[in-house]
Image 1 (tube, one colour):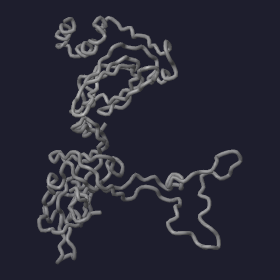
Image 2 (image 1 turned 120 degrees about the horizontal axis):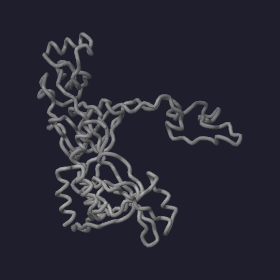
Image 3 (image 1 turned 45 degrees about the vertical axis):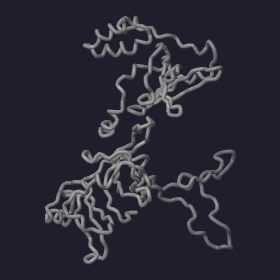
Image 4 (image 1 turned 90 degrees about the vertical axis):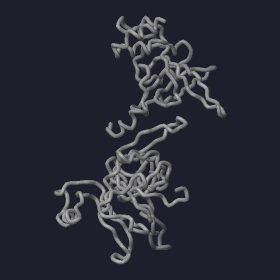
Length: 215
Length: 150
């Protein structure tokens, strides 16, 4: 959901609560924003699309492979990781080496989309994964937590697509849309978002402005 | 707790919260908005539960009103909670006083905590809280004692 807006990268710190002007508590997720330095731009003429490549967090040279480290050295940039592209309608305003202006991108009260990798739950059955029911655990029952029937017989003669079955749960990219920005501290690069965001603490987050009429 | 979160919570945490324990009888002064007027209402009862840490710490205060038990949960660092005063120290042997829910009348009584000489027990119950706090801050102790007498 990168859309046509520039985004920022950050890491989830954890949750707490703050108080609004009425004195009511607001549950917030604390996000520590990264360096967010422009590392490259993509143009219509050269690449066929317009985008800005952003480096998330400063890292050490030995954490990068030689081609990646070489690219940073060539442009006199700090070593950054990871690199992500954000599609924009016009990449002309972004110069390589610029820090993205946090205060201009995020404003208090605006709606943002937050994207992250959800906490992995491993290979799970349908009870945990899809909230299916289970059979009796005792009184002679042999039907405990297994799936049961996955469809009829000769007609239709196949299993319908999209049937909920056991498998990997979590550890997928999840976007939570239209979260409210409670507070932005550009100096300390800290962002408070109302509500929960995907992933574990320390997980990488991509933050973009929501495509809504409220922004 | 994470240091960044601590920094965010630090300005929100009140420093005038009295020392209170499970079983204490407290009076909580809550700001109530009626229309566009704001007034303070007191609510007195026994702390039966205390949970959470940091800015999210809450107490559950139980009282029996017109034969019906009422339990209210207060976020102690909330700006809506104006003040909490300790009326009576209770001696209990549980961290959660859920057993009070099953009891009525005399059985709900809680023994008063007998405190040693060091604790400023001589001061009236309502002023115990600021006095106890003054003990920690030694230079301010004399001042607080003066105000307690006055």
